[in-house]
Length: 117
Image 1 (spheres, helix red, strand yellow):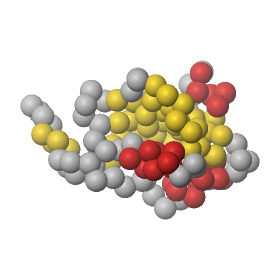
Image 2 (tube, rainbow, N blue to C red):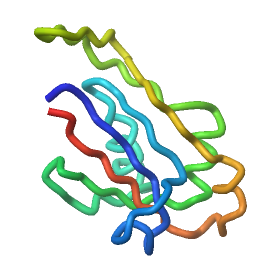
Image 3 (cartoon, rainbow, N blue to C red):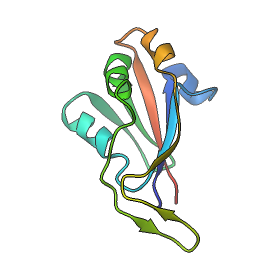
Image 4 (tube, rainbow, N blue to C red):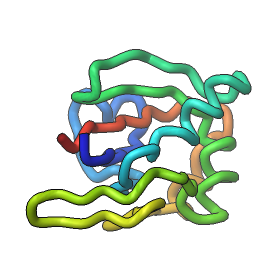
């Protein structure tokens, strides 16, 4: 595994993907924030095998998190044959916080976490 790519969508959009409300890439450890939300009862692990893993999180909780920037993680430095990803690496972020704020805060959004192996 090299890291994760995230896509946040409304529930109906998860089955017929269109533009995501947010997307970004992270290195190893990039799902730690989701595991923390699940353990606090703020997210639901909907299962998956990495292609993707799916989580459900209320729009209100997610907006509060993303309004502060991308979730941080302490993933390790990864050295590959033709790449290096530093510890805590994130990239290619697109977050439409304004659009997410227009949603009902209790609406459950789907987060897909795709293994980037």
